[in-house]
Image 1 (spheres, chains in turn orange, red):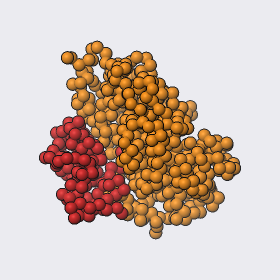
Image 2: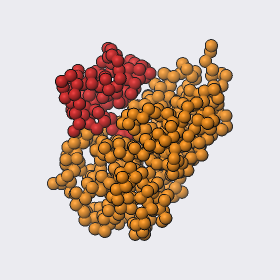
Image 3: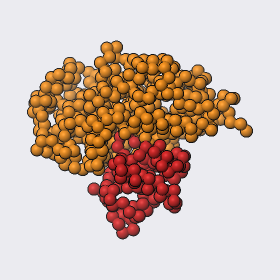
Image 4: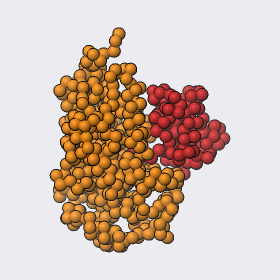
Length: 462
Length: 105
């Protein structure tokens, strides 16, 4: 059978199409239809010839099958060292086979490849740091996801997420008007406590252009208020754009390359239009990867950089604490065993380990911070990265993957986990729900706000 | 598919505990989620949130933004969290029988 009603090769483009796919709750019919979806081998092979460059080809060919990547993969370790979970095997038996067979693979193979690409690799890139050749399976799986997406073999939520980006330029059904209205509403709700609190909209030449994750607008608007409060207290000259405010990219997780480009260009357009000195994104890992690290290449920018200097929230926070723009009341610092989750996307992928530890040195009473083991660029994925958290079809596999992080946290003895990344925050919440180990977890913003030593003119009147 | 029971009724749920079929929503489902969410007693305000979520979902096929929920109920964000400690996107939607929100939630 060719294309299904819900499951097919056509990207979702409009809000109506998003709603239609959502109406198939949990994607039950979608996955049934997928079992009969044709593979367009000619299209796949033509795409490979056009898009598969020397790096990926070389990596597939030079892999010595030495097995060094095995122990680097937390999913391999947490699945009793199943040989089928060795990163080299996972990519050779999927992408490698597709190349060998010049795209002539069948439906069952594609469904298997989907399972491997989305439930056996979180694109955490840890294997790449241990391979003697520097082969990064995570990057290759990112590429494979693109081939699978094009053929319609993509998890239901990922297809919706990519469609949201196409229809709304956001990973959820949040319009530009919704974004501004929600931000203004949040500022109103908090302005009694912080007189003068505002959200400056579309200000040109500001020092900071702030971008967010649509989930903050849709489900967790307090995060917007917290960002406004900290910029306000720090005395920053900041703004948000009416368009191009969404920094995340479920399109990246889905492998929808065209939507990746559309989404990131909307943010770059805001930079070009408002000409800020810097762009700062919220406490998100993959948003940073999408907009700051990978985005320039999707947008075809020759210098490999966004149009203006773009930094992660933790870099700004570390700087604000260092320069005294934000002052911490030492009596309010964290005085309980606490650890931090290093987000793969900006720690391993961009080396920001010192920024988060500098923040810790300001907000945690000396003696209470405990590193996970391993940590920094060697840390394990939270267990839910790369879209894994959001895919119901692979929930069993995701919950198994959470065990690595659970055990790392348990070994620290910490009761509080700092998680400056939405994906990590969600995975740690879910592991607490699943295993009930008695921990709390938090972004940095709400913790820092509670321990601020406010400038005199901002102190509440007695 | 997993099922749960409450007061003699059986419900099919998804992998995150959301009701699979919106049409099987009933008082027993609400009672089940109330115990899961650790809410002592439901008051008129809980019911108002549930009703608003359902009206919106029936019209739009998706859960509303918190801003819309706050506007329609006239509850401040902090109050919504007091009513549903796990948040509007999880606890409240679950109680109202809505499907799990998609995306990074």
